[in-house]
Image (cartoon, rainbow, N blue to C red; front, side, top):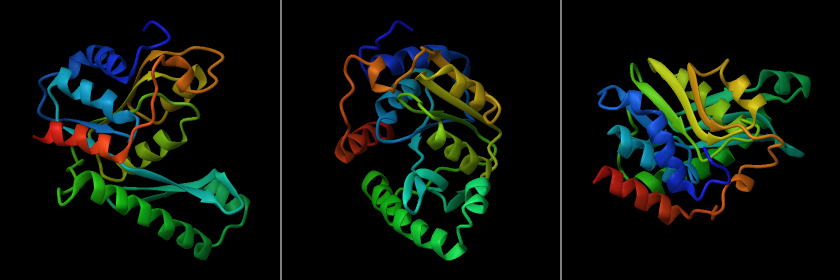
Length: 214
C-alpha cells in the first residue's frame, strides 16, 4: 500500500482486494467500527460481495483517568472488563456500573441513529471481518474482538489499511487473522497516513449503511 493513502475509499478498495479470498462466501459478515471505518468497510463489502453492518464499541474509561480503559461495552449487550486495571486500581462494581450506564446511553443513541428498528446481525457461526480505517493502540479493536468472541463466531478477521507493527503483532494473538496493508514506523497516529482524513458525521454513517442495506 502506497503511503500516504489518498482517502478512506481508496483504502477500502485496496483492502477489499487483499480480502478477495473471502469473496462469494455466504457465511461472511463485514463489521465496520464507526465512524471512520464505514467508508473503508463499505468498499470491502462491495468487493467481496458480503453483507455490511456496524459494531458499536464504547470504552469504559477509568474515573479520573478517562483514557485508561477499564473495559468496554458493545452492541448486543456485551461487557468486557480489563481485570488487570479493575483489580489494580480496586475499582468497585458500583463505579463500573455507573460508567457503563453512561456509555450505554451513548451506545443506544448511536444504535438508534444508525440502525433504526433494524435487528442486530447474527454472529454465531459466521466469519466476521472487523474493519476500521486504521489502528493505533488497538484498544477499541481488542474490545471488539472480545465482544465478538462472546457471540461465538466461527472466525474473527481484523482488516485495516494501516497500523503500527507492534499493535498488529499483538492483535495476531487475539484475532484468527489480521490483514494490514501497511505498518509504518514511527506511527504517530492514523491520520498521518492519509492525505484526506475528514471526521464523519452520524448522518454520513447512516448514508453508507442505507446504501449497503438497500
